[in-house]
Figure 1 (cartoon, rainbow, N blue to C red):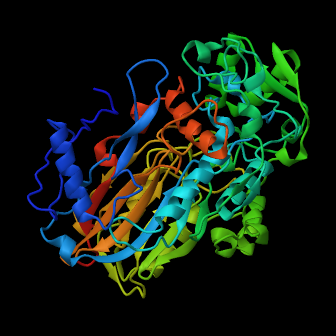
Figure 2 (tube, rainbow, N blue to C red; figure 1 turned 30 degrees about the vertical axis):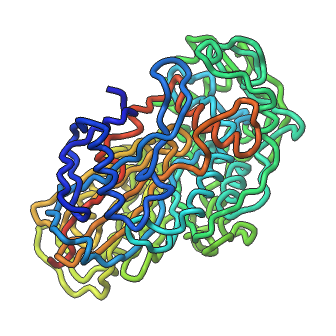
Figure 3 (spheres, rainbow, N blue to C red; figure 1 turned 180 degrees about the vertical axis):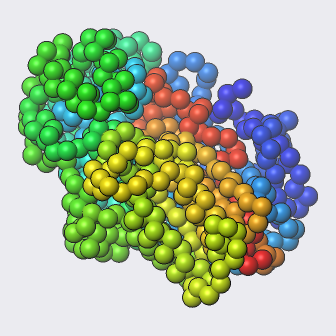
Length: 582
């Protein structure tokens, strides 16, 4: 069954009243009428569903070939009682606690950069995307959506913050970081590098392995139904005014903010390639397959092969060098956030302080709301590879923060410790998920420090009942995981959200409520950008490009939308858990 069908893997539409829960267990609705009843029940429980995927969702037309998008029915609320029972009447008792937004994996990309591996798309679907020249406009359109909403659909509370959970840039270049900060804070953005008067990337190469939008040449993408869009590349790189977020915003670091293409360790040896005048646009299949494998298993050998390809590749293009492509360090990443030009709606530094800029330690705490605190971690590992881990010093710091915000917790032997001075609910943010933190290689920034995996982090968080959620990205998938425990108050939810470069290009609103019955609810609501669903291939306005960004992403032949979408249990949910101390 198509993952986009009106029959949404939903079952159990047993809501007897407007306040009753719709329970989803992975089945399907029997009819469109059941979907409509479920959506009506969802709307009745909310303050408003307008502008969210509770109201409508982009849905493809047809079943084969290049598919256009249209407005489809929204996704009803799924009540997940994995960790605590859903008590009747809780909507009438609930007290709103917090409302905030998660962005993740924006991958703001300099597509003309020499340090890209587009020719590896057959082996790595992240190497090249037909929509990637529009990442800046797509991210700005998402900002527009958040600004237009302003409040959470279930609490009605104004958004206290937006947290971007990593891979904010695609290739940790200074120019990408400037574009990201401009989109978030507002201002004029020119998403073009190198020669300001022309595009110098693979999408006008004439190679059949890329979408060449302005050429009539029948590349492999046009053969599959992709359109010819006159003026696309010039329009994609022209200046535009980004509105910036109206809500305060914070940044968490990801592996693409920390290393070359999110995979290769950056030891400063390739800076001249970043800022140089040679760009590989293709190579033979044998070398491409070898390089793709080395990027995953042997970064050092990958660097050596890359150097050889620059001298004998089948297609090396001479481009305009640009010093703004220089990769930034972790310290420079923090320092850039402190630039007054990028303060926007605040706060100054967006989580990073002068101390962070001096040390390169990119982890911190922030206040989400009264009684709710956020802890942002750095799970990147500069040794290379995409997956992450956490060092002992940061793990110890995390435990100190958890103790500072908890009035009780559990020792490793299960005994209870009391006497803490704080009593805040805690939301942990990171880029990596619990299942993508297995990279235990020594981090070059802390060579003699032990690294810890996701299982160890889960075990630590479960010792602190005030932890209610771990919010992350990296996987480019919507996936919500219940981390249960024999002691109910020691359970928490892991909320993983899809990227905003790959379809479905969604962000997530997260709201916390006290249900007045010994339970807490986390409402998670997916949102799309403000772009319209329909596209016009002759419309290269900012609005037209934002719409095309979504449609191209859906049709990317190397992407897997059905996987990245997740199931209805990972979409719009009410996640119940025991209130600490109950």
